[in-house]
Image 1: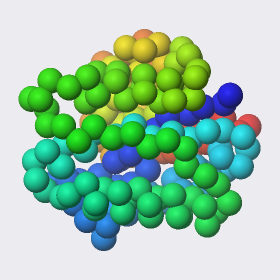
Image 2: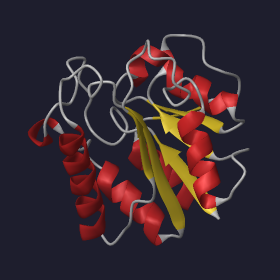
Image 3: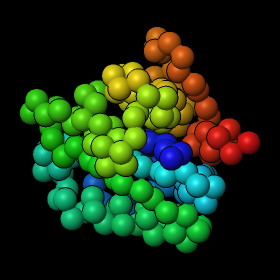
Image 4: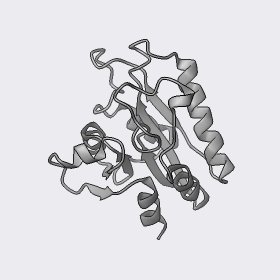
Length: 176
């Protein structure tokens, strides 16, 4: 199975330090939807692992998050592709859960869902916590320069981290 795991905010859609709190604020990064669809059409399973502490903080309800993910699935389907499993951590940073990145719970959940080992699977993110999460389960850390990516690039990256301009560039590399 060809599996790729993506962070959401800053990779698929524009991010905001004030959180993405409504369907109207959920705006895809140019090329990201097409990239996901192209990967899917080429036989890749495209899964998503996203921290969504805005739920625990009371900024938006689970129903709004579900609407965002329904819209994501709809947009990718319009391009002929499919989005696989989407897992989210709704917990706040102090709740001590095992799913909030940089803990690897969400990636493990995806691996178990598909029955595949995570070693070498590309996990694409824009933050240091995404890269740490990838390392924790021996995924290939991949950094995009969108979202918080430029800020993350200014720090020390885990050994072997691959860096791309955006998700479209990641897809182009995997499909070449």
